[in-house]
Length: 295
Image 1 (tube, rainbow, N blue to C red):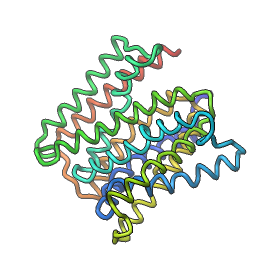
Image 2: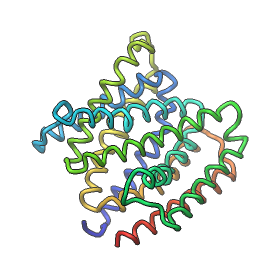
Image 3: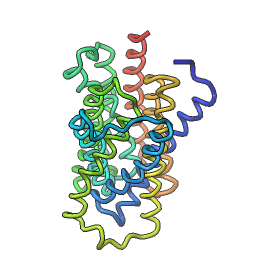
Image 4: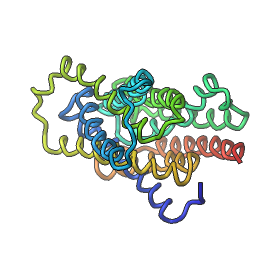
């Protein structure tokens, strides 16, 4: 791994912009598409550049080979379930709030890792970072303008979606000896298989009459916010390493707030900014301690 240069920093910021913008696009897509169909179309379009990448690099896609059960389980927990839950949650809460809640994934992931991974135990400063970060979430829930009795459950659903990302990440470690492109493509294909029957039986997508804006938002989510973003993530991971790549967690809520405020006219209160600062501080303390241990 090499030290980040200007191109690496540009790609990281670009990734933050893409993922920060995904939440208001999810909200727009939910105006016309129901959760299972939204997730299905999103991962279908995401799978196209991933399959092409594997073909170009001559990487075998092992989705239906010997380890298919692991690919299937990861596709369910890391893609299908969180995509559906986030679509449900974002439909009823501000898009930037979803970005803030999702940015706490490193914190919730550290708790799960402490119990399920031998080499990822919480230290004092890691625990401090987690507690500070979650205190920011708690402050968000006391802002009745942003979260109230009408959308409280949807905020919790969004957090549950981020938790499934963590579960999927832990499961993915079972296949860490395999190429990232193969694992991501294989799990994406399995997520499509899981989502198809739910979309057809529950939502009957052929009856939909989506607007052009919602359709374009969904196409963006699939090709850009998922497919292209994952390819950029692969590049950052392989060139600069995991620690550098995870710094995108600082950028996602910032861009999420900007997109929500300027493009969706969403209300932002002072508690939102205070909560964001507290959450980012918690992530910073956790990451600094994590980096120090690895060095």
